[in-house]
Length: 394
Ligand SMILES: Cc1cc2nc3c(=O)[nH]c(=O)nc-3n(C[C@H](O)[C@H](O)[C@H](O)COP(=O)(O)OP(=O)(O)OC[C@H]3O[C@@H](n4cnc5c(N)ncnc54)[C@H](O)[C@@H]3O)c2cc1C
Image 1 (cartoon, rainbow, N blue to C red):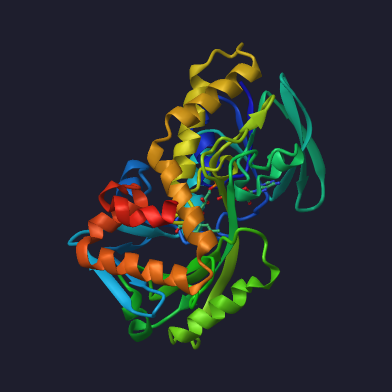
Image 2: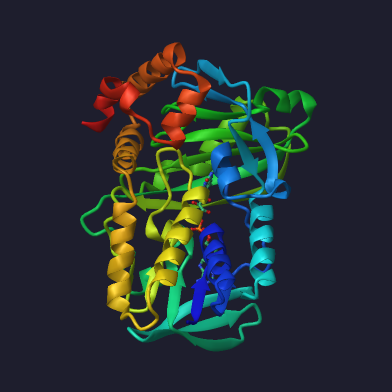
């Protein structure tokens, strides 16, 4: 059965690899001409996911063993483990590796092509492709997949990028890649550092992640309850860089992008022969601001769904099976983490919210280990903190 996947990020490329491995003819399209361009993701992952998803060492940039949180008062708290807790990937290299794998398995990869949905019904869809020289071609396929990320390019064309009755958490992140030296990089090596509180940035958080060769990814992300034009992400980022004494570092790259997920993932994930995957299907977790492993898991979920069903099954039934699978495979922890994210980010705009956050961080500082923090932020193990987290949920 033919499949055309729009978007060759972690979700689209992984789906292409899975389907091509089972002998399906797959076309994979991305508007990027080069997999290293616009490497917007900070790309921190827990070690378990790096191993499970078999991300090769060539895609790793640095390992980390600790957490460092800078609270709203400016105090710094650290937690260290004896072994690696995770990896910061080079997002450009992740894409390069995925694209090479896809090609090796026979996927037709069209780089530098922007896709637009032209016709859609339950037997197939036609997509218009415009290449970098503005040449236009058309492709018809039994399935078209929206893997365009948080922008939900194809769903948006159908008016399906909304969240229905489910709350949509959305925002934007910007990040600069800085060239530090052995002295300026050392306070940030081997750990993920976060900056939490309105003093750093309202409605969001800042971060410094280490990369190989004394490079640092420094970024800020804000998820306000509605679009706030005066929020000034760039200003918050330059101010963060200044406060950290990193203003004299060369800026090697500037990038960023949208983030958006519904809390319960109850929205429609397609129509007729169009299905969504990855960030376009709200797979990103916005409590910890991470989505690479979830985008790849989402691709596996959709691949299993397509591969298991008979080719003759009508589109509506596949849509229903996919929907059911997404909701049954989702644990209650997912919704709790979404509600915590909404409560935390939407409310982080006043001194009371700062106080609450400082108290929570002090509590974690006194009682939790580095592994506990990973369990909380990556595995959503909240039960241990039950009553202390309640104020965030109510
Ligand atoms: C600033 C920032 C920091 C982040 N940090 C982390 C982190 O530390 N850890 C983590 O796990 N996650 C992080 N994320 C989230 C993570 O990057 C995403 O969840 C992940 O990339 C989603 O993968 P995806 O394949 O669904 O979408 P994407 O990676 O967004 O891929 C979508 C692809 O579609 C292409 N595309 C879009 N529209 C079209 C079109 N019309 N035609 C053709 N191609 C199109 C784009 O070029 C892109 O390559 C971060 C996100 C941001 C914005």
